[in-house]
Length: 188
Image 1 (cartoon, one colour):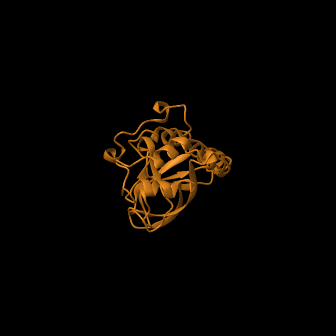
Image 2 (tube, helix red, strand yellow):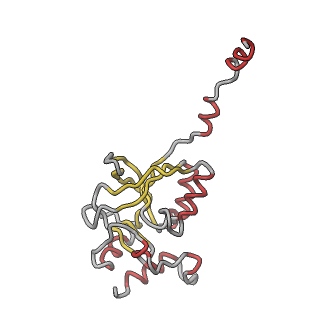
Image 3 (tube, rainbow, N blue to C red):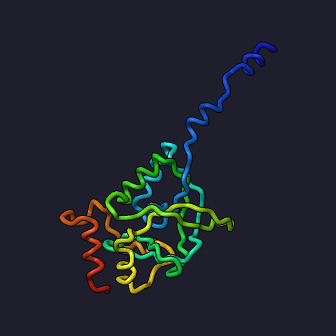
């Protein structure tokens, strides 16, 4: 019996392995198609399965910000503090590898969205710093004007009604060209 206890005590500590597995995490606020129940949530599920993301909880933006829909009912959070609503969404803790995949989905390198800091309120009231994918500054104000300077407090199924997945959109125009056409058209 003493030998078994002694052998167990001589086992290498688990801390180095745990340290290798636990990558630093960035809190990411999601407000649109990455949320549960929406079309791009599968990416977060894949990241969670690979250990690169975990759900933290429901959250709301601390500042009022505009949430609008662009072409194909694609949601955009606009970096125009004080306008709009406190937007409801979800908070995830994401590894650097997970952030790379989210950046790719959000077209950060193609100037579709920008990953910028945001302050959010958790359901229990705590305020935390995170990042969010905002509409790129090159067209954000145009989207706000096109929306009649009216936004949504949440990207809900009703707001998303009519959303068209990327693969089902016309392929002859880039996404930035689709946005330019959208902002130059009359609102209905």
